[in-house]
Length: 275
Length: 230
Image (tube, rainbow over the protein chains, first blue to last red):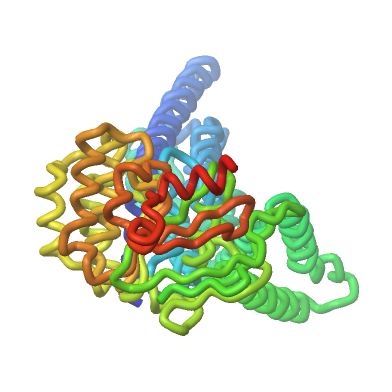
């Protein structure tokens, strides 16, 4: 356990500079995006008021409706979803890089990692935990960022025009944020469990490639493809199965895939991996 | 004793180790000798479980290599530094202390001084000689019975080489078994007890250096000439 924790801390440390850059990009992009979109919206409001001889914001709100936080976000949507897309892409790439960087580069760190006392499966668990913590860290940052963004919205949009929205309601109605941080615990757990299973499958495919090179690459790609089909398979039976049955089948298959991936990875690390 | 019994290793269709057998005893320095591509590094990796073998057995004191052996039984110093570039020398020592119960901090501190390594230096900024010394330090500061060294003098300057060689005649290795590969035989010939000559993945001759000197008046290099340039 101690060695596993040391490995997790070391893996987090190795990514912190890129991670800090991703966090900074998220904060800056979304803050600047919201500020810019509210300014654009308010210019339009003033222009419309002048054109239609409206004398107050209340009259404007009566005629055209209020400006919601969602509509403010949607004006400069790329500042929000764009920063999220960059973070997601970086983490997806890191799922591969977290293994390959140990083999390539100036020094071959994998020598040391494979010669550590204790189970080699600790490497698998530590890297999986790292990816999960990095993902949850960005989700947590996003959750923490919403209240100040909403405060900025309330500060910049006049009271008569503003529409009070909760973070929960905003996330639930936003397609991207709803997918990444489902407000309901069951959805959140399912999304991230499927994510963890997906990462475990990719790790197994990487270890297949590292063990058998070209043949392993083909086997790994096939394993990932079949696993992907198994995960999305139950959804294609929605005209035959009840939603609860689809849910149950998805969870059962993902548990099976996760256990299988851990077992294969353990065997490869113990018997087949090659430096 | 490190014991290799009919070990076979293949990379695809190419057989790099063929039915290879020999032993390396504790409290002795055994040197693996061979031209490039003879299978020396692959052999060390196979002993450490860093590459799978397709046949034969490798035993250390009668047991197959297992995860518990990395802490107290055997340490490996590859021909490349095994620590990531972002770490400092001090970070490397802390890493080893965190993961290995048999890490000898006192010996590490002594070697740090002996090799004149600066704890604040980043691994990325180390010269080839300094990297080799740090690599050796990481292996020597583990209290293990056996030490495997892959080309410890490769590409380093004369003075660094002399400093590293002096380690082999010190108490740092005297009660351990050392199995090493090197092309610089002249420099260490007086220190080695046994030489195992490899060619194309096979052991073609195994000699006790002292015996061959006394009995036939030959050096290891003389034997190498006989074997590789008949």
